[in-house]
Image (cartoon, rainbow, N blue to C red):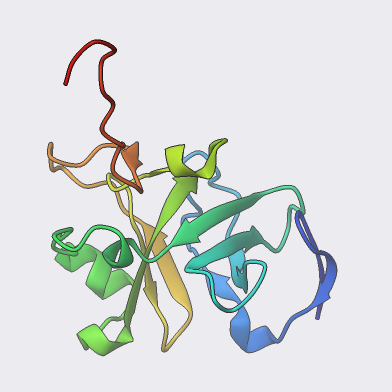
Length: 151
């Protein structure tokens, strides 16, 4: 099937690549189908979550565990039931990035991860009730700055 994308123009995708978000994404309730597209090349940990219906709706996403080794949360039972998750091997987790200039200022939304069942192509963005996670965690630690005149 052919879709129009925000970053790559028209693309051919396979039906099996479609991800079904039964309730859409928060703020985008009518957007039910997405596809994960590789970013510029295979060597980057970034991907694009592209709406199938709306070409200009695309999110830069990444696997949060590559950047935040101590990131952890429990997937609510209602979500595992909704996505028909039977084993943790079926699960892929992504977070949406807010890309900044320069790229070192880019942030990740750890408060609302995207949970996918990669076996059946279903997905859901969940909002965590955990105060340790916010919507803007820097991907890269801030460099130490020295104050002029200090040693």
